[in-house]
Image (cartoon, rainbow, N blue to C red):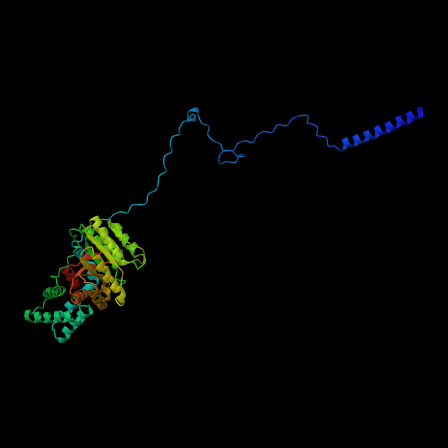
Length: 402
């Protein structure tokens, strides 16, 4: 009996020992939490950076006094608005008066023209005026672009007066030649520009001519002539085929305070001309100047379009002037252009440009005879005020010189 009890006790001891080993093994495999440090570590919050600055390099700011610190809820004083740079204002010019302008520009005209007068006076001062001398006189006049028929008329009158009067002294010959040349230029022609407004519409002036005659520039200078004479002007940029023509005309207009009506490049010229006159009526302007495209006289379609411009404008009222711009240096070639333009529109006046260069003064006579209309304006330089009303007496005086 005792033996059995002993065996049972030993078995229990073995079982309990094995269980302890298992529990100890499990405790060793479990990771224990780290032991807390002896001294706690305190982490500081990051410093707040200034607006627009790096936190590491704060900007040094001046310290403000208590008076400078606004109270909570107070409204800060509004900042002064920044100054806006305005575009430069265009200075409106006041052109010089046109009265006597050709006299003031006489020296320019005489540079290339007085050779005609000097040549004629030299021939007429010979002791013997035979047929050969008179033929030289004719050649001199024809070379100056006077034209064959006007030259023959002038020589015939001169021969008769010299023979009858027996004029021989230089002063007498100069007086005689001046009278005959003046008669040839015809001072009786009406050279006034019809630019006064009507009761309900402004006066309308069409400026026509071929490329290269200075047509757009002449239109701008004509605006200055009218403003100098007290007219209010509206410009119509109906030359839509030449690049920058509208810009060029607008620049001329701004210099004298004239409004420019323009359209898109390549647009309908007749429509722009119509709008220009409409604008002139709305503004109560005295005159509307319409710059047309430089039509080549060999292109029938473009010439027909010029006629269309005139017809469309006439829906507002009459066209008072149609000014043909001719380059005086082209001589007899200008007459060909003049004939074709006269067939399309009724030319009322001629503007001769570049008369101060190599031009020959006789073209004034020839073109008047060809068209039956007067030369009303002449260009005598590249300056803004070098367009002058044509004065026959001043012109002839420049031809024959002092």
